[in-house]
Length: 276
Image 1: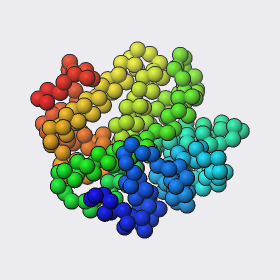
Image 2: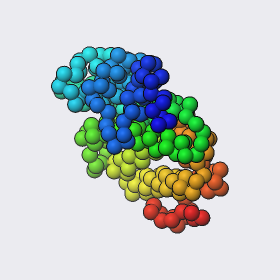
Image 3: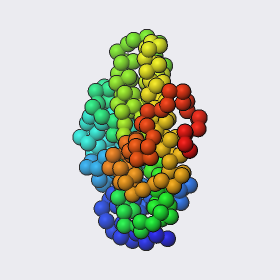
């Protein structure tokens, strides 16, 4: 009910606010309607990375989607962004795909649609009452809906980057993109990127390094969730998540709870969190 009261105001706002209203009106088990999502996002897809992300996610599901128009309006915005370029590659004619893959491999960042969606939904729900019950409901709703924007480009990447068996120029391109993912401020994307780097490792030392990176991300996630389950969520956590991403938000939460950012020496994913 608290969220429902926000919707009329959001529905008359910017395209991003209207997208937030459409999202928040859904049950967390429902997906965005592709036609409605594309209608909201397409007009701003050349200016807003999240609107571009949502348009590129939903376009393949619609036979009537204006693919050529969408590729044209997102061209400038996608420059340097491996995630948007991968999504554009999946929509492109076969003749254009080699050049787009080259753009993917030379990108300087991996724009994270999941984090962009979380930030929008958290901003849009800031007026909600600050009571713990409402804030827990807010976080549950927001995280459930934002998951729909998580990593649609992974399939396109995995198809082009199988397990590495030798050092080639293509493998090095794949590793460059996966390393961008592994440095993401979003735990989900960072975990996927770290796993891909392990798959693309070229020797045992590299595999061990990326296994250690993956273990540290699992510690952040599992220890952070244990702290939250114990009732230690605070306004700072939500603010950090919105502004910095959940990776740093969880690290800051562990610090406030007196837990280390790095896992104990013998801890492995799935083991209990000391003190919790």
